[in-house]
Image 1 (cartoon, rainbow, N blue to C red):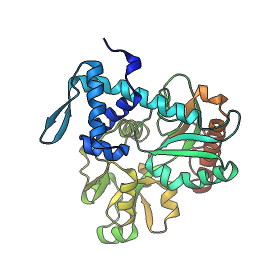
Image 2: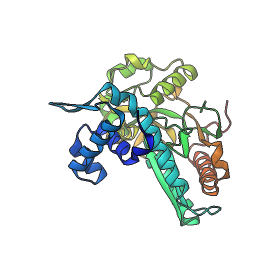
Image 3: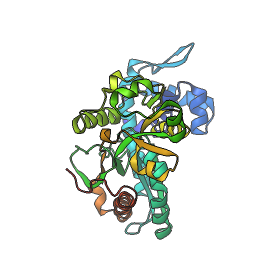
Image 4: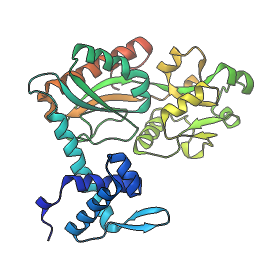
Length: 314
């Protein structure tokens, strides 16, 4: 029988790094400890639970069924430990300490920096952790304190504010269009280099559903032959900017770039956007301050850079 109090959190943290990195040495580098220490942690955890967790193979360490079953519980522990440290990072009642924000990479790189810089100018002791990806981090498990989402949160116990419509449209550089021609219909896209996503993450699937619902004229994503595929929306935007082809970009970003042209305006995609956090965080002064700053900053950004965007949820 497992005695839970005898299993150190360090063992679970090491286990998660080995699961992710696939080797003891890579996990050791990530954690800043020695490889023998990683090995001892895994052995101790295996002794405590009574099952082997990894099998050596020519391609690294392969997780066993026991490891796969244990992983979500270890991830819950990790999220709880991180949330605990953020909660303990500031003095009660003061706007200081750590707040973790989840956002897409494009939003995080292109839009959030001035909002966050202004926020930290006002509250110098505020620490921001910015998690940039298109994964939908779980607010209930406190993987993030606050999330900026292009799909409406459906979880219970979530406080959310609607921001507006971050419209997306097809863009290309003047140089590319001069060489390849400007498409004027959906069918014309077949003759162009298209830039798009590599894998259908939950975020991408949600966006595709929204695209087809709001604009039936959009081409079927499964039938599009992309010349460049990238999981990162920021990488896609970079390829568009250097003339690599035609791809989807926020219209607000296209307007700020004199080299980009918005094409096929009848095939725009609305990305209705929310700022959300767990309802328990309403009593946290720093989380309330960050939440309000994000709502106000994002609304101001839309008003300035995309005044045609819908400002009220449809």
